[in-house]
Length: 340
Image (tube, rainbow, N blue to C red; front, side, top):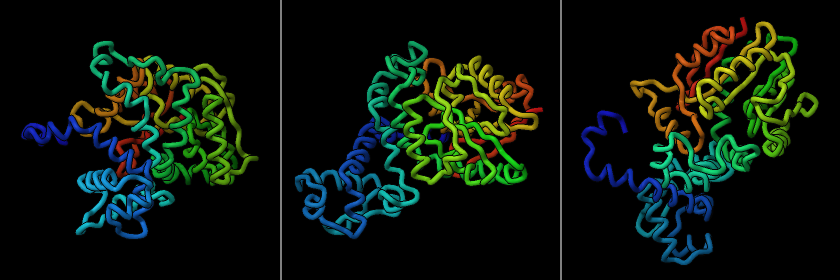
């Protein structure tokens, strides 16, 4: 909802906001019960759908009606069919399948932290015992498994920006920090001259290896570096260092220190590519403001930072001013700088 619309919104808008958790629960149930997969072959009435998903007819009808209200199903007489949105993004196996993202936004982390958000505001940071900076937090394994549908389009966006530069080099040594699924580095590794190192916690790198096998990444050009991104020796030097959705987890001083550490691991003429939500006080990127609330409940002092923040960190680390490359249709932005 835009600022202008918010000023004129009535009680129904407030009701919809308060029902946000209900919407998440409904969609999560539809995915978990394979509703969308069962409807892909054609419309079904509640009885037939209940048989397909193995649930009582009455409760199935109630769920199907709710999914229709959300615009994910369409109801024609007594039968329900997929809408284009559900067909494209909620049927397993489709190229733009988004259902796995429920492992993040419908996770126990969110269900535990959101009802206690006021406590986080009072405290100034997360109230969770296990949070973003907890070593080897198992949540990051789930994140590596669930974030692929978001990573693929963003990884193709940075490949479009840096691909020609990568191809111009006889060898391009790439470090992917907090690699997670590893998809950003793996996308660049399609260039035969790329030698890739993926860095993350040891438990997360198990998932990274699984994705590498699934995507057919050349194991001879792959290295895995386990450890804490602030403490581990990066090695190098690298021609390119990737940091996707890393900075928002930490306070500004740690982001500045991280940038200096990254710069020290770059070869002369090397580049750094950061993907993140870039905040602006006019809220022209509302997703960045909303994401800061997620970080308030999930991190100790993280938030979305401004372009000016990144520019200062780059300058202090002797990197060129960040080039801004928006990811079409995504609230995140790629910022690319070079070692002077």
